[in-house]
Amino acid sequence: MRTTRKFGAIAGGIVLTGGLLAGSAAAAGAAQAAPQAASDCPSGWFCVWSGQNYTGHMQKVAGNNADLTKYSVFQNFRSYYNHGKSCDFEGFSEKNYHGSSGVAPRGDKGSSSTPGWVKSNKWVNCG
Image (tube, rainbow, N blue to C red; front, side):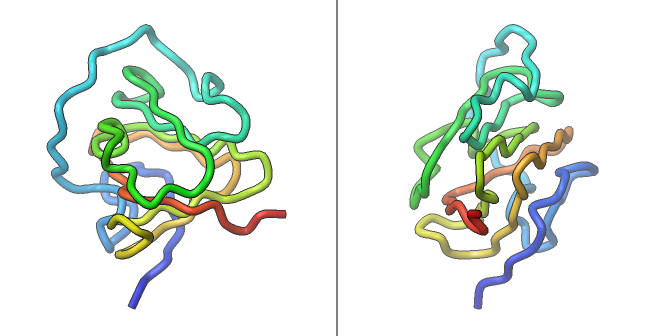
């Protein structure tokens, strides 16, 4: 049975008790890039950064994705922003839209010292 919860603000580490976005995921560290801001995420995309406060390597996705594990930053991020135009972002703890899930409403963003991960996503509540 799939459990859906609010994506949350990643603050303080574990966002979802189901472990969707936090844990000890160990991915290769991304090279630090010039400081960025959440506003660097293009309109219509969901973006994650390797560092806190929207720093480090940024990775972005649009559309539904059954397998985000090919994107290293999605397996070890510390900041996120849903800059979707008309939909909320639902992230899943497993590939192919399985496992625990959480929803980041349009405009939701957060930063944490604890890394998070998302293995698949869908855009939901479009309007």
